[in-house]
Structures are given as C-alpha cells and as structure tokens.
Amino acid sequence: MPQWVLNCQHCHKLFTCDEIDLASWAAYDPLWPPKPDFPEGGLRMACPNCKKGSTYQRYELMYTDYQPAQKFRQSRRLPDR
Image (cartoon, rainbow, N blue to C red):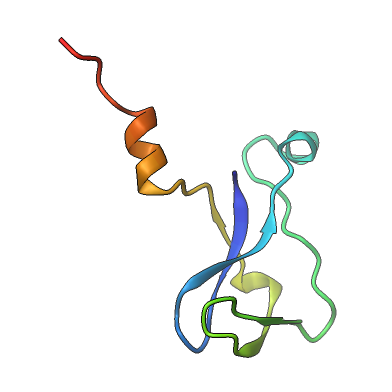
C-alpha cells in the first residue's frame, strides 16, 4: 500500500508516518497524492525502530509504494516453461 514515510534522525531507518487512502487519492490528483497536514512547528513522532522522538516537518515526507521483497518476487515470477 502506498504510504508517506519519514527518515529517523537518529537511526536513519525509514518508518511509516501515514498510509495513503487510494480512494481519496484519485479525487485530488491521479499522479501525486496530497501530503498530510502537519501542525505548525512540526510533528513530533517517535521512531518505531529506535524509540527516540524527533520533530519532523511536512517537507521531510517521502512517498513510497514499496512492497517487501518476498511479495515482490511472488508477484513478478515468470511462468514455468
């Protein structure tokens, strides 16, 4: 599922900030989903990996529709000959 991710300022691992609702995405722009709103001064979040909190700005959000490698390999498998 497409999602907005942030890069942890401490451990530098990506973590999900918000999942993108595919139904509402198309209503705005079929090529680029709208970013979620952040409070003025930034959004304070704790990284689920290292558990350390940081304040993030809206411009730090990155779009991804990454699927784990296992699922990717299964969905892209070539037919047997």
